[in-house]
Image (cartoon, rainbow, N blue to C red):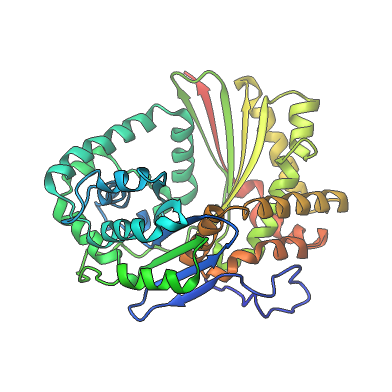
Length: 434
């Protein structure tokens, strides 16, 4: 959300329920590292979630899969921490840890008792700042990642999503698999990974989010001590510059016949604005909910309950740095695919010319705002929310969503549908049993 509004001071007439004060502290340290902290005094738990602008979009040409592979190798230790020591140190005290890599970021997180933060944080900091990437572990772990890729090829839903991504995103990095390919990974070296690590795991590109039962002064003391000695930043081949993904100018369709597929799928997707225009993205989320979220939604009622052409139909909506993705997914017998696609295109087209009802709008607003509220109930959820928005935009923008959702009228949604949701801008993929 690059053009993030100042949610703490906004009083505009369309701002809905924008919050008046951001509840977390955001501190930029002298070395450029950003710390985001919210104390929750009532919980004995603390979550540390470290977000880094080191996702797949930052990979140079020919290094596809490097960001995800590095996520694995970070846990292989440093000069001070042998492989397995980090997991043992956290799990022996009842803590949990994991990591994930996407196109826009990588993040590493752990949940521990608040009293154990001083014990656990040095381990995580050392791994992130000083990953050794030993050659022998590199070779062994590469086989683990290659096997993960092979397993993904056996998953019809993964194949479908990846095929649709290539169709929708074109040459943009979002169209590439985060996992990479076995062929490319076999060509990479430990030193190349060290270059990628030293170039991107730097304080300016890192957000340390800590939520739970530890006060700010203690958090700052620990973070300033443990996240101090970053590796010297060294040059790394840069990712090729890319323009944001472009809306399709004509519909694209593809059918895949897959072995081991027992039931048909129809997946239809449209591009929307990125995190820099959260208000428009929020409006598209409303339309996704009106169409296929819950039994009262239009397509569930018509295609699943009345016509009984689909066993299930659902919407999903995700916002990334450069764009959002609006998806309608149906599970159905292959003989109904063409009919269902025609109905969906017709109902999508009507959104641009016929306002949704006030009842539909209010239901969607209630559903989305409640889902948002439910996503902020635990320290882990808060840490993820602040880290995601703090990496792609600003942490404060994480609280703007319900205000944007509430601000919409039925009339304001029509031009949004006309701009983004035309049937001519759709990528459509049918999966059928081979």
